Length: 159
Image (tube, rainbow, N blue to C red; front, side, top):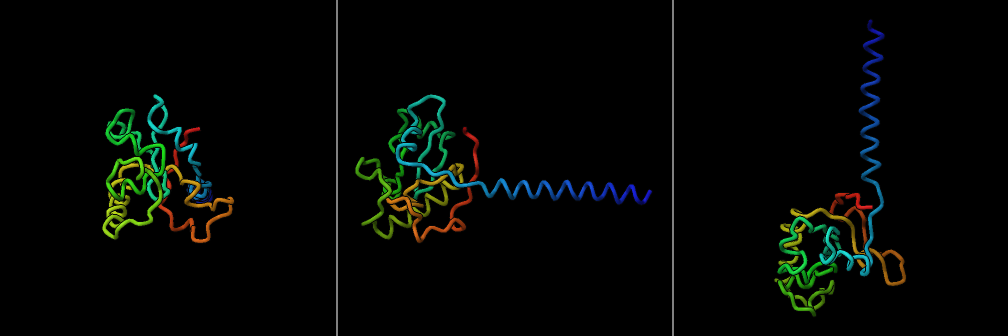
């Protein structure tokens, strides 16, 4: 009888450990990188396709905010690209629809960080990164990119 209990305990512990290993393996999946062209395909114009936008090189699925970001919606200009500068400046000016943060004021940079943390990271799942956040133009990894410093990915199977 005691042998049966020990055997059952081993089965339960073994199952729990295997679930833990599977979770760790799933969390270690590669990060999805988006080129500018790939990101443009998710601009809210095609029915049924997820709507993505990038802020600070982090790609968010903003589909559940379709009333804001979908086709003909007020903030549709921000989607399908990295709109970091526009978010920092709270602008929809076509010249601001870029990832370039050069020349932004300290106040605009603080606003960007606040919106990034308080709005996008809290409301929308992260689906990847822009290639330009991680890679140099020649395709080599950027020296200052550290995977462990990136916002936690919430993986989404879209394939």
